[in-house]
Length: 272
Image (cartoon, rainbow, N blue to C red):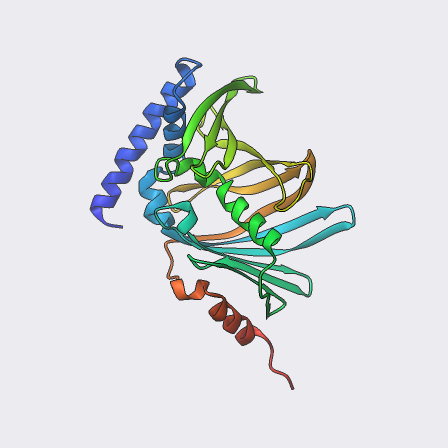
């Protein structure tokens, strides 16, 4: 790391301490932008978000819970961060037993691979869920300025005897809204929640709530190593991070479906 970048991190570190102390002992009602900025610094600052975390690979152990039972496997997320959320390059590889799935966005269109076969056209509900998972992430709050999001302070509630959660509603220009519950003591995002109405459906919206815990410092940035996902109050997914690597060599071409398909074919064992 260059001396200039090290100095920038030192400056951000002192700023983080000052803002965290101010948040812990200051007025209970603050500007929503100040709360979001304090949280941003707690995760490493914008320098880390667009420098160290400009791309990455995250491998997790996943447990999917449904009325039909529990399925376990591994998920590998790859990304290249762009100035806007909607421009980010994304790819998720999911292995559940003998089943392998891949879903991605190459900057212009989305795609799906199911056991090595390209879905053409990709299932619209699956693509919609993939997009919404990205827009309703904890990183969205950390990137609120760059994405022209509006913030509204909702209130606070008790989290522990010595800590409260400040609640912010974030609304993106397209109307996507997420509520964040942020530790006043640490600036960490503990919960986020949102409503999801399936596309082309009059069904009642589902309420999602994500719980973040087991925070660890990785490459000078804060990462939640366990995420629990609840749908209408019922646990549906548990993710535990196994490996994290940021600022790695990732080729944008790898996010295109034809190249992901080739990579999948290359990984298959040879037929005797």
